[in-house]
Image 1: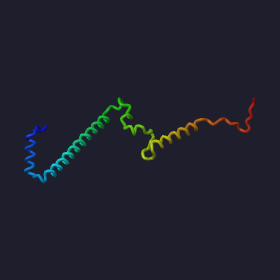
Image 2 (image 1 turned 90 degrees about the vertical axis):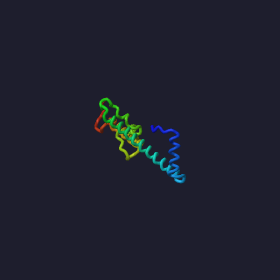
Image 3 (image 1 turned 120 degrees about the horizontal axis):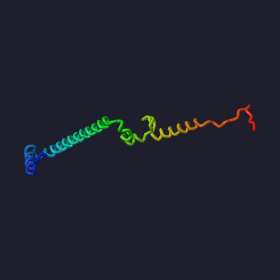
Image 4 (image 1 turned 90 degrees about the horizontal axis):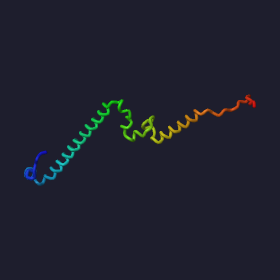
Length: 125
């Protein structure tokens, strides 16, 4: 990238030693290391943000009729939640237990009660 060889690096190190001095050289190198570390983090964060934006734009511009299974694009932790789950009210397990209880109650309500004889009704055999 910069096309700097070993001789140039030695020359730069000697110039730094003369200009900065041996006493302040470790402080300067430590500061430069932190500066380059921050620059690298900013660079990676920037590119990660750009990649995420590209993915979001890709999902938003994708033809919805071709992508009927949008559920697969969700993270797995969200994909496993029940359809009528309200975040923050209860855990997913509690919600599933409540949903099973409602389903049992619905089943019991839909089955007709057994026929009983009214007092005045007489069977004719």
